Image (cartoon, rainbow, N blue to C red; front, top):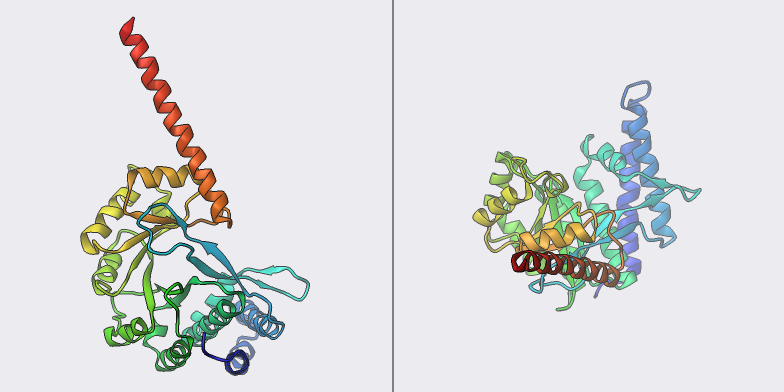
Length: 313
């Protein structure tokens, strides 16, 4: 990667400092109001992030995309998930912190900080293939686009590296600028449509990203839904195949190796599995899947042998 780490740290910290100063006004104005606690928490999280950056701590954990198919184009992709820890080493839940900024007009600012921080961690740790969450609103913000494209231009991703932007919060009234997205593509960035289920909003999202998005990430509620449910995995897979037949599907919220094998057997176009309860070690999970598959084959063979015995009698 081509950019210098000291320049990157300076730019990242400058943006954090500017956001802290600006956000402090919101905290001050919220005194005695119902949203005061959430704003204070957001500010605390941002200060913690700054301290972790200064200490060169890893602020993201990586949740692997586990391979389900021989057709998987990437060998070791993983989603960067914010994992802040306070001064005592206690985890700070990331969702309320991020939403404190999203709900108060700072979506692009916090997304820009997290995007740059993710690239910095990628550089330091040598991760080859990562995905980063970005709101669709940020991709329409000139400052976010400018700072991230400038950083991407200096990265010079190699053929074995991959950077995927997982687009969330896209809505029917928030259309994407295809020219902007194509600029990211020129620097080797791919796109994933995050949290796809089965509603009118998702139909519009998929139609809009046709020929631009490489991946569809299927929402965990769908992945874990009952087979008879209206939003079952079968229904959503058929829906995705119809609108974006060339897209690669990722099942989120997969529970364990047995669940992954069942998905692989029923839906060959679901190429990756991701889940909070799956092991980080890809080889370990691969072995777990192999053992589950072997047990399933043995069970089928036993049933067939018993059936033949019954027929013979």
